[in-house]
Length: 99
Image (cartoon, rainbow, N blue to C red; front, side, top):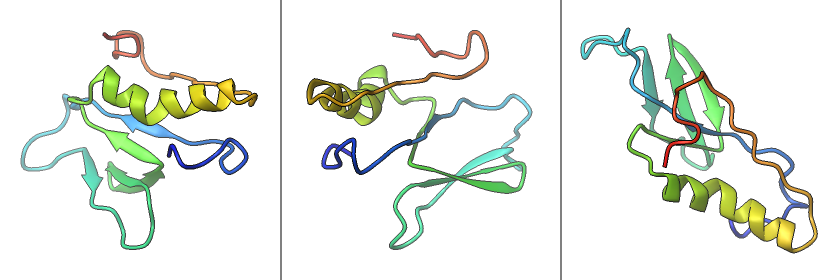
């Protein structure tokens, strides 16, 4: 988050998900679960397995929202003299550079 400095957090993971063509309304393959009390972060269930991320966004998450959550804190840390990296990983055509 913006209140944490680069010294406080080494690596954070943000997940932006798209609809899975295998999913049906009756049996979704991927579900974003409600946050657990007193445990910040997002939980995502994929094929019955639960994974924890610092934050998660759905298909409707805009680039501006993504930048505010991920890029802006890193840019601020870089301007304060810390190293910073944003690593975008995903299948070709999955929207990593979408405007």
